[in-house]
Image 1 (cartoon, helix red, strand yellow):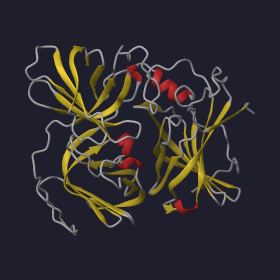
Image 2 (cartoon, one colour):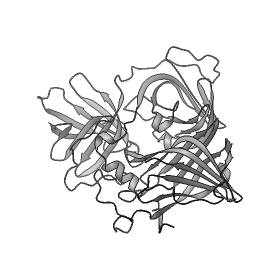
Image 3 (cartoon, rainbow, N blue to C red):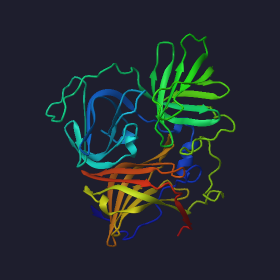
Length: 432
């Protein structure tokens, strides 16, 4: 590391502006920016042969869906899971922070979200990423598993898997309530334009919906969904619907699908319908703070403090999760693009992920590029160049997971903090 000669203390000017819903400027500017200016996520999906073992239990062994997204999972990172839209299985996510290093998460029960499960620091070992608790591997189909030893050989798929599975942007409204609004997985269903989508909303298990056009006149179709989250088939009828642009609508239902990354254009949600609590509104009002007052003037320092559980903290390649403090902070100077996410330990050490460029919001999650790290210990401050990303969902609607990963030279840094769902404490101070 390089000692920063300019300061031995934490500066509070390079901090992030995010007040969820309509609170922090980065979130709002990302949501209010013209569609063409918003970043597009280069998500790709394909089938692979996979193996996932965690805490001594084999979670997956065979055909898997393999999703890559350099923005979300880092270069070389991926998500493994079932390719079927009609079942809930195990999965794992490997987020790569730099060459040969990263963090893995997985779900402990079928149908759970692997991004919100336990975490472990992992290193690359051929086709596998391995830590103390997990091993996640992926091979091309038909490649075999050279050099791999495990409790089972790669089985053949028992049944054909759905073709055309791909990410999409979905909206489902039933009887005046928004059930789904954002990222989903889409698969064609039959040759007449029907399809099925699957997604998770507000931390709940899978939501499934189906459009059936078989035997219907042009511009009309039947809509079904699973209604009860435990049901893994969309069999509850919502009635016939009429096509309106990207949507299919009737008196009680509105079901819309766009391609992943495609702008929704001038589309608006139905009058009187509120967005799900875990997602910020698509067109928020003018920026306001938590008390409902107007946005602070430029130069005001805003600080959000979160309470919860620190699940992982990696500093200079060393796992320090056991010492991680139960609080994290996120600050900004109003009118500035500079940002910092801060995580501390019980013995007064602090790791800060710094940014000098504005982040963007996609599917309700802030993505903040990172270009520097600051580590403070015993009154000394060390500043190093790094490259990475921090991600934070809207923290005002319940528990969320804040993750930061970065790489300096060949050294990984990472933090994963799960909030307890309470509203973060907001403080402000004048510049100076």
